[in-house]
Image (cartoon, rainbow, N blue to C red; front, top):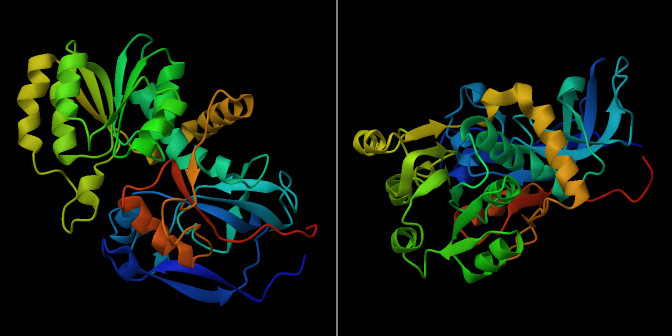
Length: 349
């Protein structure tokens, strides 16, 4: 197929948690894949809470501006390098790489992950799906029969944590903020959805789960973190996936109440365990294969959101990423937020 002479990508030019001020869209000349590289036309990109951690320069791998924004995408290969044997033009692939918010991207052959089709369902499995899978299995020591609490359970990664915990034979509690999300959580098997806007989570945990919680999958931070920590059972494990409450604040990312953790943890022989997906690169292939099989067999339901509760949705083009990041922090989204960067080609590649 004929490629354009130029394409657009989103670049971080200023380090700040204010995403709209940090990034801008630039036009650059079309690139050629090297001998062991492929050129992908991006179809969809995934939106994560950590987009503003990246734009604030909180990750070592991002370096100094300017650098590309975004970290996950799916698309079709439009050109391959002379030494590429594994892939061919027209094949659908997924990729996890910094600079994913781009209409086209050159990737090392080893970074490209083959997928059945460049559809939103498969982008949800990467950062969001693998975070849930690997954190629960590698860090949470999840066991059948345990009680598990998932915060932001209707979100991009929470939806996977709910279902994987259920598949592991656990009783699952999920927090959310709307009745629509309660319905969504019920549809994916959550045993006890809690709309914390209508119910007091502390009271629910105290009255309905007096024995305590065995494993917490925590992404919120702040008061929610404190509530979850105090609700732990003896020998309970709290997995810190993130603390989105702090992400939009300038300055250090760490929570302010670290000193208060010690007495609670000690009194219950409990533990707080951190998880960062990029420390488990060697397990990506195993995890993605597992999740893809569960999706294809129907054992895993995937919820994605192109902006159905936002008056600017559906989100399309690189411009749609600005609104999609705002949408994530509005707490209106259900499932993984996805932006369609390029429409599907009707002609054969």
